[in-house]
Each structure stands twice: as C-alpha cells, then as structure tokens.
Length: 171
Image 1: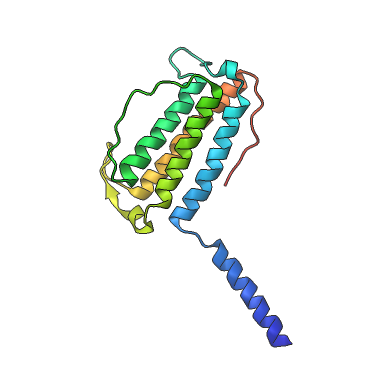
Image 2 (image 1 turned 45 degrees about the horizontal axis):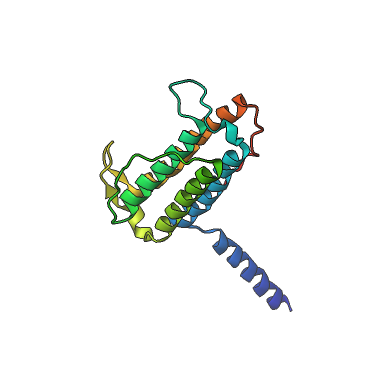
C-alpha cells in the first residue's frame, strides 16, 4: 500500500512539473491570447462615438491606434515568420466599431496561426531588421511590446473620455 501511495504521489508530481514546462512558442501564444482578450476589452469598452477621439491633434484617434496595432501585427508576423512578401498598403479605416474590432481580432488570430506554424528552432534564427540584426525571438517580443505600448496609450484615451478601464489581465 505504501508503494502504491508513493507511485501515485510521484506520478502526480511528475505530471504537474511537466505541465508547467513551456516552450518559447507556447509561452508566447498564451500571453498573446491574453493580450488579445485584454485589448479587445478596451475596444469594446470605448463607445463608438469616441472611436474618433484623439487627446491632441498630432495623436492618432482611438480607432487609428487599433488599426496601427493591427498593421504592425500583420507586418511583423508576415515578414519575419512566413515566406510571404509583406506589401504595405494604405489601410482604410473601418467604418464602424464592430468592423474595427473584427479586423483587429483577425490580425491577432492570423498572427497566432503564423506563430503556431513556426518551428520552435526558428526562434533563434537571426533576421535583418531596420535597427540591425535581431533574432526571431526578439521579433516575438517586439510584437507583444508594440501591443502593450499602444494599449498603454489607450488607457489614457479611456480615462479622458471617462470610460471605466477593463480589469487588468497579466499572463
């Protein structure tokens, strides 16, 4: 009976430890999904009549910030994790809040699929970037940092329009 208890304990301990192990890809994708949900909560919280709000004339509007985030996702994920040539085009702003949320959601989902299809070994490869050579892992970090940077700006937009902020989501 003691041996059975010991084996069960060791089995549970081993599976718990193994379940907590993650790869670069799984860690990124978990954080990316949470980042998506959190940004979309901001997009949902802002009333549609404030999607054109900009704190000053030189800043992007709330909607433009969201579309800028989307464009960066498209550029980085396509350029550095696929063989497809990225063609930068002038993006027309969506007409409605719902359309804006849909294109941002699609960009998050497309980036997730691209990263899911990237072999783990590729994250250590070096690529040419405008600021010098970077590893693909650094590009993954940039993807997330860019979203976080602009979401931080959107905190100000929501506060200035007296919209309650969504509850913070970490990992």
